[in-house]
Image 1 (cartoon, one colour):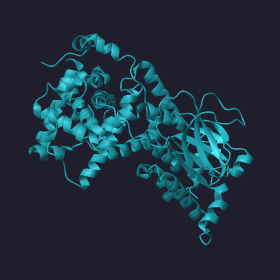
Image 2 (cartoon, rainbow over the protein chains, first blue to last red):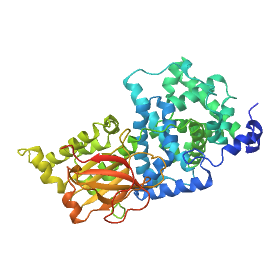
Image 3 (cartoon, rainbow over the protein chains, first blue to last red):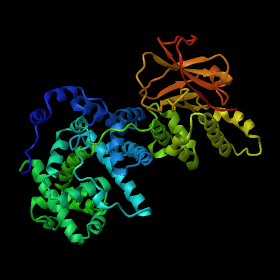
Amino acid sequence: MCPRRVSWGYVAEAFGTALLDRMTPLPPDSAKVGAAGRAVLVDLLRRISQQDDQALQRLYGLTCAKLNGVILAIVRHHAMAEEVLQDTYMNVWRQASTYDAGLSSPMTWLAVIARNRAIDRLRSERSRTRPFEPLDDIDVADDSTPVLDRMMAGQDAVHLRACLGCLEADQQRAIRAAFFDGLTYDELARRENVPLSTMKSRIRRGLIRLRACMDGT
Amino acid sequence: MSKGMDRYETDDLRTALAGEIALGLIDAEDAAQAMARDPQLASEIAKWNEHFAALALEEPASMPDPRVLAAVVGSLAGNPESAPSAQHDGIARARVAASLSPVRSSVLQSLAFWRGLSAAGLAVAAAALIIAFVIPRTGLLDQSPREVVVRETARVLLVSAILPKDGPPEYVATYDGARGRLVVVPAATLPSRIGIPFLWLVPNDDGEPIGIGALDPLGTVNFDLDKALVRVADLRSGLVITLEPVAVPSGGTAQGPVLAHGKFSSH
């Protein structure tokens, strides 16, 4: 049975209040920056949209380590990750005026840009070299991430991870490969040796189940 | 029901399509068409982005090489479309952007360039970069490089990485001789220090240091040099950063230890 929405009470019960105490206050470059940190990032993005280069440098100082971690998890190569990171902040510079604080948190917006740039780079590299890695190499149930890091990503990540675990193995494998490796439908279908339509159905069913789990329905 | 909505027999299918778009499984053109057909799709995509971003942000942080920031700053300097507006203190950068050729800009923008510089090679490379800036712009190729460089110092951009004895650059300085403006940018997330980082100009790299002003480890600082300083700020000048216990008064001398040193030229 898929879990209900995780509350901080649940997290405290599961991991202990001492650990929660250690998490406060969170470091400035963490993913979960809190309401005050969020306001700072929103203000920096507003200033960047007005072409304030000092604000971009400040934003870089606050978020570069976290975004580099996001990119590194996708491209898995330090030098390439740093090139993508540079590209990411140039995109932030150009697109800051499109950020809508009512639609997403600043860290989400930044992470989406970082992830998209990383996927673009990965696909570009893949088209020039080997087509893709075997799916078997992908660690579906990767629990090696330190507990504190996982929790700093917030309860959404804890909950999403739990809900992913509720999917069929082939569904979660495909969704994770699409997310972290940027595989296309064609690549996923070839990798799994199934028809394209089968792969599409597999992922769509998985996404619907995942969302139902996330919404607690 | 609209034609676009025919695709969705249920909200579940909209949810799935939004998830596919968030995952990057739908190409951009198809995604844009789907979003145009279904106004509710954007908010669904945003929800998926929120969920998936949480998964991505679960990854452990990894501090990038400090030179990435220098490359970002270089990109801002070299991209006329993105140059800061005049009301901000990136005026020199905007002017630089207007004056740099694409080839020269690409050098500043290249992370590989900044990453490839060893500590020992930075000063030489900076000098080479400066000469590369100067010669194509002046068209005075028939003159000796040194003659050209010295003559053109007052009209071109000079670049210097300021680095500690061991380690990557802490700051990158650019000097716009035409305006007498020196722009100093932190090239790394610098460690917390007790004291004030203070910049000194060293004429001929061995003269008496002249205090320029306090630096900001978190952001850009612009210095508009007076005429006396403009006369001595050239390719032979050195830049030194000391850590001062208190603000240095005008005409004062350094009291604190030297943190970093840079040269506009190795000549």
